[in-house]
Image (cartoon, rainbow, N blue to C red; front, side, top):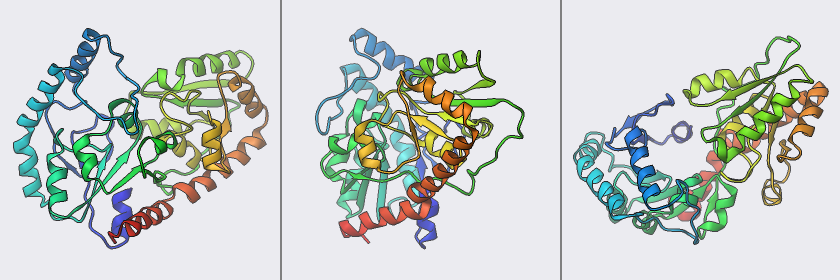
Length: 344
C-alpha cells in the first residue's frame, strides 16, 4: 500500500522482505535470508534459551526507549553467525537491484538486514534519509536496535501506547485498500456470524472471547468464527462472512485496535475492541464498540438484538476508515513528515 501511494505521486518505490511469508502476503523483492523467524528451529532455539535463563518468551522492557541487547552469549553468537552467512546474499541483492540508489529508506520495526545495522549506517554515511516504523512488539519486547536508531531521522508508529516510549515519535495511521476491502454481506439465513482473528490468543483474550460467544450460542442463533494460522487471503475471505467482529479485550498486545479491526470496519462490520481512556482521548470520534471481559457479552447481546444498530455502526466504521486510514490521507500525513524533516 505504501509503495502504491509513493508511485501515485510519481516517485519510485520498492519494498523488500527478509524472508518469504507463510501468510501469502504480496511480495516485491525478497532477500530470502537464513535463520529467520519463519523457521521453526529458530523459535525452538529462542524458547530453549529463554527457558534456560528463566525468561518469558515476551519480556516487557523498561526505558524510553528500551534498547535491544542479546539475552545471552548464545544469542549473540547466533546473530553473528546469521549475519556472517547472510552477508553475501544481502550484498549481492543490494548490487543486483541497485538498492543504494534511493533517497529515503523505511526500516520497518527499526530493523536492518544486519543485526549490527551495517546497511543503515552505510546509507546514512552516504547522506540517505532513514525512517524507522515501529509496530508494537519490536519496541515493547525487543527494544530499538541502537545502531539503527542512531541514524534514524524520523521515527513513526501506528501504536498509540508507543508514542511516549521514544522521543519525537510521530503517529501514522496504517493505510488500507478500501477498494479491495468493501462490504459483501451474506445472504440472510437467520444466523449471525461472530468473528475473531488472532496469531497469539493470550495477547487478545481469545479464550475469553470464544467462551462468551459460545455461551450466547445457547440463547441466540449465532455461529463462532475463529480465524488463525492461515494465509491472509483466506483469512479475509472467511472474515467477509462475519456479521460482527471482535478484535481484543486486553491491552497486552497494544492499545485499541490493529490491522484486523481496520479490515472489519472497511467491510462495514460492527467491531468490538477494548478502547481505554488514553486511546479514546487520542482517537476522538470513533466507530468502535468498546468492550472489556466484563462487558463483552452484554454488548454482543445488544448488537444481536438490534440489526439496525449493526447496520448503522457498519456504515460509520467504513466512513471512518476511509477518512483516517485511506491511502491518500495516510500519504498526505507521511509526506508532511518528510517536508517537516526537510527531505522533500
